[in-house]
Image (cartoon, rainbow, N blue to C red; front, side):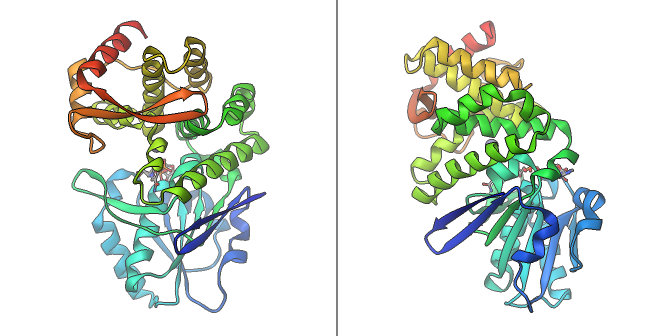
Length: 346
Ligand SMILES: NC(=O)c1ccc[n+]([C@@H]2O[C@H](COP(=O)([O-])OP(=O)(O)OC[C@H]3O[C@@H](n4cnc5c(N)ncnc54)[C@H](O)[C@@H]3O)[C@@H](O)[C@H]2O)c1
Ligand SMILES: [Zn+2]
């Protein structure tokens, strides 16, 4: 097991990588009311392993990440007579953790909370960094708070029951962390693809720990995303637009977005052709896509509507080498030419 501590303005969060769901009670306060929040899939697979506390069960999918679910949870907490001293544990992927963190932050002006993170995406990304919230009428993560959980248990053994596509999608964020901050992680991934894809636990723990360290160090410098934290969006300006115009899941869209952003970095003379090809090949080796079929105007239009847009230029996260990212304004005209190239030649 590896433990990483995240320090932010008013809280410290313990991230326990390789710890087990079975040991959850070790991290919970005694003599206070504990309530578990989880989704129907986790309850189906792991009910026998959950400690004996009341459970609030929610459904699955992005569609339930809304204020109606928060309303339901508030009602359940009241019914369970949870008070200011109570503790809420979210057990699940990014959706459960985002909802649990938000619900705990507003119930009685805020109660204590922690997570057991059960998807690769939430272990390497969603459950670290203190962003909690829900969608509002089709706008993603529109309502929410910044608040850190007291602990995040990343039980890597639980990833074996995850649908394969979800598991592989999580590696897109690990590759992202290597690209933006760590040549060492990038090279590790190049050498250990087959171990990672066959659920070798020490390989997973290394990938999660490195990702958490990178995300934690970026977040510690810029908790509220005013500057540096934006590099975590590498591949995401494209990915958000791709998700809008296709049925591709997030991780797969991020993989395509990283390939596009790396191609643009190469075309602008910021990285070598060899580095671009290494990134593209690593994405392919992880069984992730590097392209999809699209109409240039539709993709550009979806990118224009993204909230990250600033003025007449679009601010892209590009690479100056493998392991270093920078924010660079690119004009729409320039972007259109690159996107056209990508559509024709990838
Ligand atoms: N707060 C942040 O900083 C942040 C960052 C990235 C993403 N997110 C959010 O995370 C969400 C996506 O998270 P996700 O990819 O973890 O999706 P998810 O929570 O929907 O989980 C994916 C699916 O796998 C199931 N599942 C979870 N763990 C399982 C396990 N161990 N075994 C079997 N099935 C399991 C879930 O029930 C669900 O059906 C999005 O809403 C996104 O906005 C938040
Ligand atoms: Zn992402």
